Image (cartoon, rainbow, N blue to C red; front, side, top):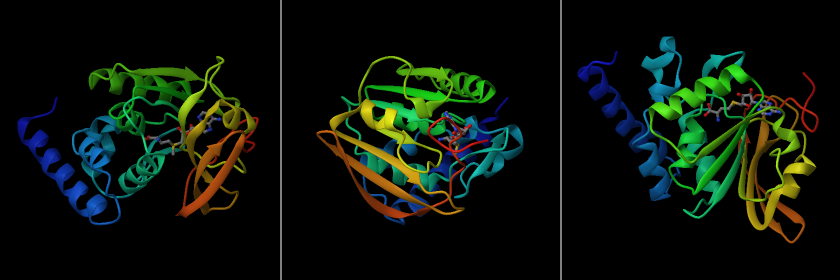
Length: 220
Ligand code: SAM
């Protein structure tokens, strides 16, 4: 049970996170700032980490996985250039926090997680927050969404050695894909624009993500 005091505290910390960690750096997209200013990140965290919800670092969510730091969530979302008519594919549901951010900006979000426990926790958190425009799948996201469909935007929240061919194929021409790419402890955050069948990538910065485990990712 959350007391009013705790809710108020979290709201203050959330406003400070937006001001200091997002606007204070290079997050300029007003829609990203607005949506991250209203989503309760604490509700996507295990009880033991709720008090750190608005610190700008990743936190454990179980099964050796992490919720990404708020700045990286904001940066990847900004790089994705989401508009209200976009259908988005997200690989790596994790806690569901990034999913909630995308759902607040897009038409529909399709999200895949390989750990069913995490997917179920995320579904509960998103339901509690009243999000209805998200479809969930459990499995290897490197193989793409399990139906024949193309997306306007694709976001990978785990690192890949290179872009999985099924994901490149499921991105519409004119679409954008954002992914951490590389095999080391530090990877490149890359934004790809699809022109016809070709993906043209641009490195944004270095980043640190857990590996994407799967047929077109890394081995366990
Ligand atoms: N965006 C998430 C959030 O806001 O909590 C954080 C995602 S976490 C950094 C990466 C997630 O990718 C983990 O939950 C991990 O289990 C998942 N993952 C790794 N390989 C995957 C795969 N092949 N298919 C789907 N999910 C995968």
